[in-house]
Amino acid sequence: MNIRYILINYLITFERVYMRSKFEKISLIFAGCLIGLLISINLPVFADKTKASNLPIDELRTFAEVFGKVKSDYVEEIEDKKLINEALNGMLSGLDPHSTFLDLDHFKDLQQGTSGEFGGLGIEVGMEDGFVKVISPIEDTPAYKAGIKSGDLIIKLDETSVKGLSLNEAVKLMRGKPGTSIKLQILRKGNDAPLTLTVNRAQIMTKSVKSKLIEPNYAYIRVTQFQERTGEDLAEAIIKLRKENKFALNGIVLDMRNNPGGLLNSAVAVSAAFLKDDQLVVYTEGRTADSKMSLTTAPENFIRDNPRKNNYIKTLPKDIQDTPLVVLVNNGSASASEIVAGALQDHKRALIVGTRSFGKGSVQTILPMNNGTAIKLTTARYFTPNGRSIQNKGIDPDIIVEDGSEFLAVREADLSNTLSNPQDKIKDTKKPGEDKATNPATSDGGAALKDFKPIEFGTKDDKQFNEALNILKGIDLHQKN
Image (tube, rainbow, N blue to C red; front, side):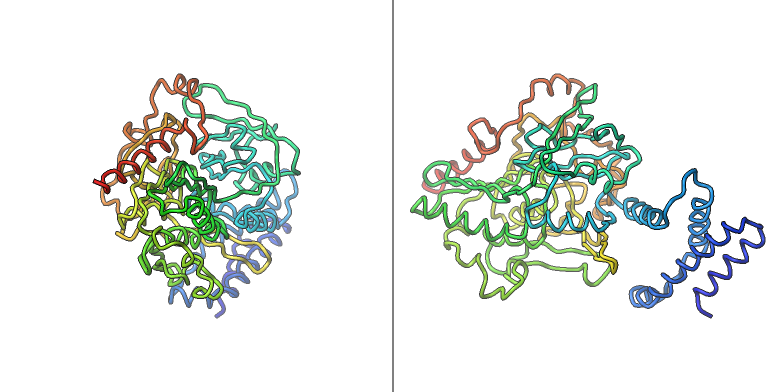
């Protein structure tokens, strides 16, 4: 007998026994039909993936009951579409901080974001305790210039409280016509009272790679996030710097601080610029065959069209792969930037300098739906070449150099409902922020915040940058002796 037929008849019988109103019956039967239809459509898929699928009939019945009750008893009439979308939002956001449902507008915004042009404030965000948590402001955007920091908790948008909103709803409020402004009320670690910042919206056009010759023989390259052209832009920057210097470089500082991540293939491309041919960059493990990958520096792993012919990494000077390299990371370095840092560290290709990274070691896959919406779903964990899971742990620097902002540090492990690290055999009983050596949030955070002044990366006031340059000069001196 068809599972849909059984489910619908079960629901109808249940309603007759309890003598609900005519409207409730119609709503509940409609919901049962809807669920049954979805089940019948997707049953072959379930069978393919799980071989034997046991459908949660009781839970589906409860869903239908709730749906019908909301339709009949809620104080205002609610459209079916809104109810279904809210259910989808709740289903995905309850999994982990990075899975989410993308309606038509948000799916379009995401596609624009990875191409490097989109509208809004310029922040990478997640959810924490019902509020919007800033993972990292994107450099040179309105949010960055307004002083929004990694770890800020946004509690109010203009006059709207964020509590109770989904992440998509909050993001939608933050977006708007370029030139318009929005007031953000935020909670910041070490500050007793909420802060109010006014941010002017803009058309965000981010440049993912910035570079300069620090002084003769030493180059500085900053990757702000991983977009579609990041690998190509990096290659162009290296070639330009090499020509400008006229001789082989004695050292390169690769700065990925406050880099929230981005496209996986672009992270592989950046790694390939400094590693040897066919070296492993990252591998992933998940439940489906598609989620299990091993990505090396081979061009087919970061170039879609005719990878052998269009391999821009091959155009780089050969000496770049042997040029001493220092990589800068901090608590705002997440996901794809951690993949690069982990690969270069495991292959002993670079020294990692700064503070422990964010610790987002999960892979999100964008899965388009038939109606034009999509879901961003966590489908795998990624591992460095030596088999390390970065999830909830981050990349530990080879050389710790703090910049005075550690009291503001927020990492993946501080988020609620976060994905576990599979290599944690003994549960860590420490609370977020207890590790003073790596996250020194102290009782005098208010005083520290008062004295704290944000620095411009790659300048004379940038302590971590200057220390990285000194390390490169020390390596150069050691090699000459």
